[in-house]
Image (cartoon, rainbow, N blue to C red; front, side, top):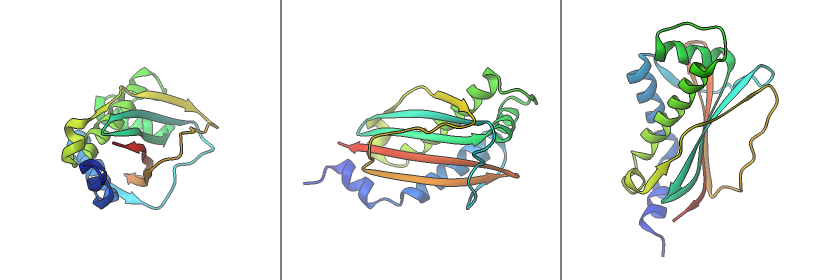
Length: 161
């Protein structure tokens, strides 16, 4: 017999809820529209990925991947200060946006809202890296565009309780 959480996850329009979560965070916290797009972030430039762990009713991770220019622009929106360096402030801003999106996404599912905890963000930077995770039970991957910037957001669920 399927658990309440498993049934909810299996019956839910995950991509729609992720689109809503991304829209809420960008519109309310940064005052900019962020819409689903078809393009992938460039992989040949300096990249940044924020990772938020999921534990409890589901286990897995949320990943926000973006290029240098997108990261700098997000930090500018959140802090009001323009910077040219991928410093701690930029990394913290991207980690916080990933955290807000993950929280908004899980908040759309009652059993996950209180039954799934989020870790603090971990940040990976570089020009050529891959993140490897266990084979997921389900995953969602969506690209988004704000202004002329592209971001990629993934929810990877390794197990459902």
